[in-house]
Image 1 (cartoon, rainbow, N blue to C red):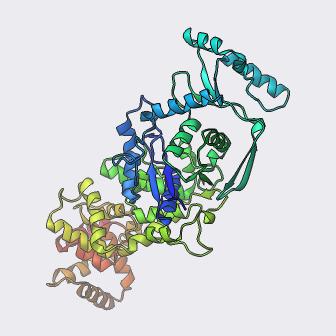
Image 2: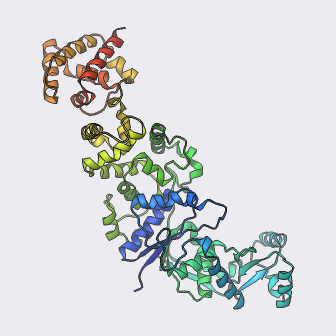
Image 3: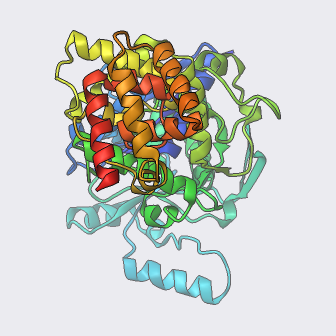
Length: 519
């Protein structure tokens, strides 16, 4: 059996779409599962675009997720170049060969002629087929038209007496009647190739064995198969995977409909999280930072393991119960026959769930290392962090435990780093400004101010004994203490919060809360 060679061939748009990344992952996994080769090829036919700037986010996404490529940008390979814009000679050579062998022709038909042919076919309720008027021209007439600079394209001559048949790994047996296909343009008048032609040349010359791609390319397949056959190429195997559907819907996930997706509660929650984080770390309003793009997840503090797990489960399943897969597990278990045919719905809550699982597996030191950059960029700690910063953040992250689902979640407890806090007004009125509570707080403040050794055990014992003496519920004082010292009703254990805020600031904050509640 030949070595499996797969490829992912994005256009450098400046973004890496989450659906495209899923396709890339499936290609990567199939290559790795079979001990094969994964090629990253760049379809950069737009010469006007700044390639480095546009390609950067794509390469960044692959590197962040740990999906290394064996051939392609930055590393080269035996079938270089891996940029379509640098392969013009290969396309021209192949087109010239098809012209010589009578399998392609120069078409001089005008746009008006073709439009008229299409209208006539529509009126007669039949498929549009190329009229092939230019095939009636003699060689001399063709040369004369070329000499005078007559606009033209090169079309592939579809063999209309054939059927095209493939056995798709996911779709099963698929057939097309070539007699119903128009002759496709393979080269423009300026000598640049069209997608279907360039793809066939590249896949053949790079010896791609499996074309794993989105189902929207299924309609391109018959033309590509016929081109492969005309050139005498070994046909690759095909696997057309379903698209990633929008959250709560059935249409394809699209960056153009972000405002519409925000009507979905879980998608909006993820967007709001990103907005809040980016505003604090200097990325507010940056293009491409939304949940449809891979970079969003990196910047907001996801782990590669969480995203990879989520992408794998977007349209692939091992069985009806297994949800969690490491990348190593996925390499061992991935097969194309387990890809589902139906569109896979993008579920932000599930992505967060996978992320939470893998974050819980992370050692404390790695969690701290992931959280520190957010605190630095938001100005909450020194940059670079001091040893004292690192020690404090380690204590904080340990105390937060499962509350750290994303690295950026550490920004939710900024009150541990600031001198001033912002109160949850509703909770303050309910928990602190209530009759009798300020007096209770003042008494507890006096007790802990007299303690020489602040520990969780000592703080808790002081609170319980004081409440018993006062005939008050411990819960009343616990809630008041939390709001007074942090401003919010949730967080780590209240005594851990007190220790993290620190003696001086705790006593000061209790004083401020009492004054606020009584004036």
